[in-house]
Length: 449
Image (tube, rainbow, N blue to C red; front, side):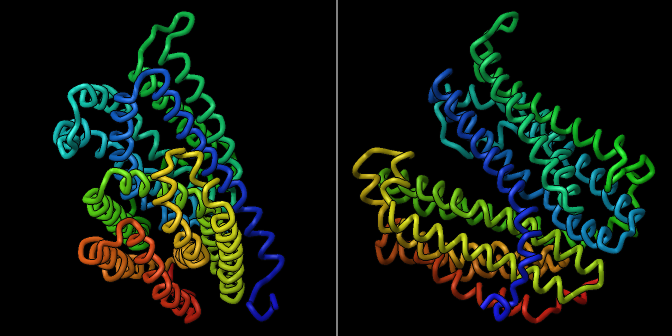
């Protein structure tokens, strides 16, 4: 059965060994995000929580869009690693590092200059506005450190090291939690700083993370070793880096815009529906986290196989990773169908919210295998350097089916929040077939990097 599906057991072990640390890292970030939320909410107040929430929404939207240079870098680094061309690998790493620093500085300056205009899109009470600006005016200085960390983690994953980013994330996030406790409420020689303390703690933890990546990449003899001369921009390196990266930036921008539009559509419903929608989105985000880790592993291993001139192994890697993703999707489907109330209860105990969430949760469960397949196959294609096709497929799925169907079902058929997951299922059925055909066609194997 496994052979018929083009699944390789040895490749499966490689995928799992790379994916598990990446999954653990994402779980860690999620857990710390929850801890941050609880600490700000309980140690300060709900207005401070709202203010920091608005800031983080804007910050991570910008980071997800503009850190997409790392998508191309992973493909190029993995390919060079497979070719054993370490000179080229280090040049790519250095240029990607420089680009991330430049982008981080530009966004930081832009955010500082236009902070009032950025947050004017929200309808906030004055007390929330005050908390927002206090938090933002500190956190913005850590954007460069965040971009450096994203670049460092991507470069290490490109050579198959997913453990080091996990260890760095663990240290940085522990520091963040300790710093929150000390600086928010005050401890020993440190005064009580409230939300400013939370921002300082986060910024310091990002500084430590960036410093560790710099040490490993620049001063430690490692698989990736950046020298000062590698930082200078060269057209021969930056052009292909841009070529393989800009589709990822466009893809992320289109996705973020669609999230905003869907949020606006759902906000036209009642408060209970809107709250239920937020809960379901959180459950869905947690459910596919392992698929993202498998996707990162697939990108690295596909790129490495192509660097070794082994297109058949790259093909098997993609199918094997997708098989694991679908298995996880089936497992989550079963969990969500058997224990729907238990999945909702950590977020709310209100009977009205639980009742309205049950049917959409069933639809969410049905979509799990397709969602996971799409995520993993996208990673495999990115690893091959086929970032443009992933961008086109994602854009078409969102804007020809997902957003229009959701809008029509909500506004013309009154289907409420189940509209989102009906639209998701339809869009994923169509585009899982399309992305499968793209991968099976093996045109990506002929892409030169």
